[in-house]
Length: 438
Image 1: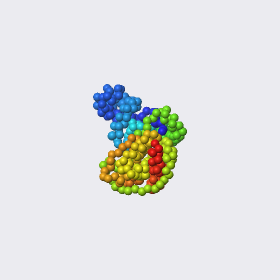
Image 2: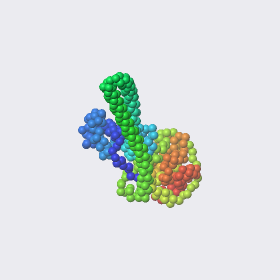
Image 3: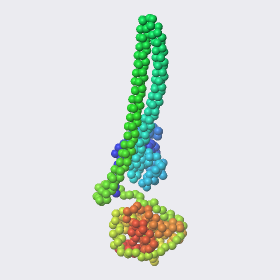
Image 4: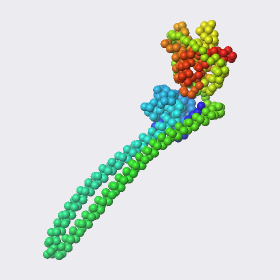
């Protein structure tokens, strides 16, 4: 059993806002005695005020108060039942909003919730970087348009100055002709021509300086775009490396837990798993009408083999009910057969701590399925049109690969089928002898 994952950093803003919304709505619906002391003064506020003005206390209560967080998680499950079910199964929907996925996973502490919160944070960072890149690109486009407009203006000014220069030159030429007779007038014309030339040069220098400044601004903007693209690339690389590192850490943690499971279980005092894969395999409900039949074949009948299998950690014992009762005590009525077998299985489950599921063929009943229960034993009847053999195969297929599963049945077809699915078949005789010995 692995440690519960931990999220070290602050929640992304969008995920925190979603969690605060769930908490604010849940706070108003709680009885007075269930409200944490730090939130009592906010309970009478309107939900919108709680979200906007009490966000920090609500987020802190969700983080520190496990009971309050579980109540908020319950409200989130009611609002998003499909998403919560998918997260419980360890398969977050690809099309779901990453913010909703991270918020529900954080509240319900579903498998891999820290990775989902990290993924939401990475997605928010990626979106922020992409938005920054788009802003930089827009700024570059604006500056380039401004540069083009400035260049066009300077071209117009240059053309006007050239026209002025041409006019001044023509005037200087005419003055020069006139100054052939008047030296003083010629000198004045030459000074005017020189001044006009200096004005043109100054205008050209100013135009060149403005163009250089605009080009430098464009260069700086392009450098900012390059930096933003580099940051986005680094963010994506960090996300990929983070996932690879997380996989390595999970594998290392799994190896460590496998080697020291007993010590960790005692030290951490973790609660037992509340649900099992077999809880999600449906049988016939009490009161349903059913019909069908059954076949038999002999397997190993050594009860020591069953003891060895029951000593495996997290073993799941699946029993073909009527196959065992007809082997061990066929003279009793079906109801007494069920009662005797379930009492024995209940005692066995209490001694070995294994998960025990007993399957009965609904076809052997007359009328409706009875409501049967036994302490520590899951009791299932096959549905109408289904045999207990098919129900047992569904139970075996529901278990994860690698978990030890033991199926008790002397039906050769059942034994061969579950063996192909990775389960270990044991004969009904072995279980009968084991229960008699107990």
